[in-house]
Amino acid sequence: ATWRSDALGDYISDGLQLSALMGRDAVFGEMAGGSDTDLFADDTAFGQTFKKQIEFLEQKQVKPTKRWTDALRGDHDRAFVVAGATDLDMLKDFQNSLVKSRKDGTLFKDFQKDFDRIVEKYGWEFNGGRTWRARTIFETNMRTSYMAGRLAQMRDPDVVKARPFWQYRHGVTRTPKRPRPAHLGWHGLTLPWDDPTWQTIFAPNGWKCSCAIVTLSARDMEREGRSGPDKPPVLETERYFDRSSGEFVDKVKHIDYGFEYMPGDLWERGLVPSELIREAGGISRATGLIVEIDQPRPIAELIGAAVAFKSKPLKKDKSDNTYIDAFLKPFGATRQKAVRFVDKSGTSIPISAELFKDRSGTVKVKKRGREIYTAMIAEAIRDPDEIWLGVRGLKLPDSEAVEYIIDRRYIRVDPDTGIIIVFQLGENGWEAVTAFQPNAKGKTSFGTLDGRRGGKLIYERKK
Image: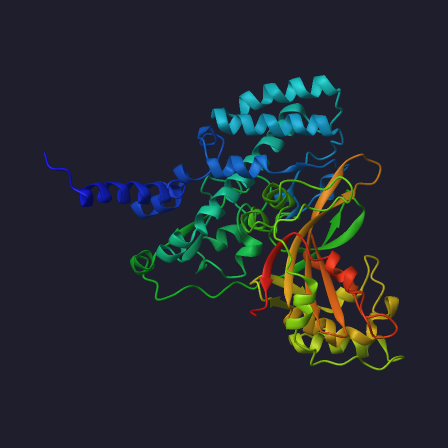
């Protein structure tokens, strides 16, 4: 036989392409028209190994909670919690048991044995019946982690190119005895993969919700007789009484409180502390801040290449609303209307008057004299010199545990002034928590500014 380099090249090429598709087969498998039930996690489907699901479960940091509402929505992308469990060692045992279940392909009955062992080991007194509590922990974690893994596959660039539409499916993993009318109404809803609606209604949408999202190609759309995607539904909110806190809150109608988010979204986009910590190689014990991933260029070089602000400081002693309006106007927002602004790195952040209120609802625009710089702060967010992503540790009240949160720093500087805007990633998305501004003499301490330039550099103005 004659050895040919081009034949070997073909084999290598086929092997590389096959390797590239590993982990995406569940999504591409939809093209074969297989059973939807085989693609999603229910009590019988949990027996399969799913690498992305395991990665999602493993990267979480244990977090103690006194009630289930202490961790909501995107918090679950970062934290492993069991409602009412505060012992960190016990939480870690529960997390390890779930991870082991995924790796070994075991089912609920096996986890229940671990549940009994862990409860007895730590003497945990929990609310509800034994089977109900164990099943709630198992199914909720398995369902959301499975969909988080699916989301990572569905957003793969090759998958998006081949299958750019997502469709809502009702009752995929089991047929509900009492279907939720709204979920049934969403059955067949087809929207582009990046439609903002998915941020709210990506399944699961409640306790024991058996809905799922599948991908569609242009040919699938034609087979269904569709000329294009559907019109996004109008999602309304309602007042909801949270019995655990004794307070009324706003929630999306037809979605259980706390489920109105996209499981795995923050993790898949790398916006969880564990992913950044892993990339950085650790957290500094002295400062509680993430070890540097990217090295910032010298501050003198940043100042030398900076662009002067177009906005100017406002006059002092104006009304709160004057300063708030000066910030909101460049984004097209008003005190009555919030907007989602996509920054230079492609991340969506909320812009509204709420950014100038503290957690009690008190307006804080005149805090530390920053009010005269609100127009310049808006310009710094809209047109920064740099955007840094970092992690900082916060010690939880009444606990030795530390919760690591993401912060996002917008750096804008010119020879005379410099502004740093810090956004913190909370359960409702990005919220502004800090803004640095020039001192009373109109100058900035560039040493302070330089100290905040660390972590992962996700945007830099072109030189």
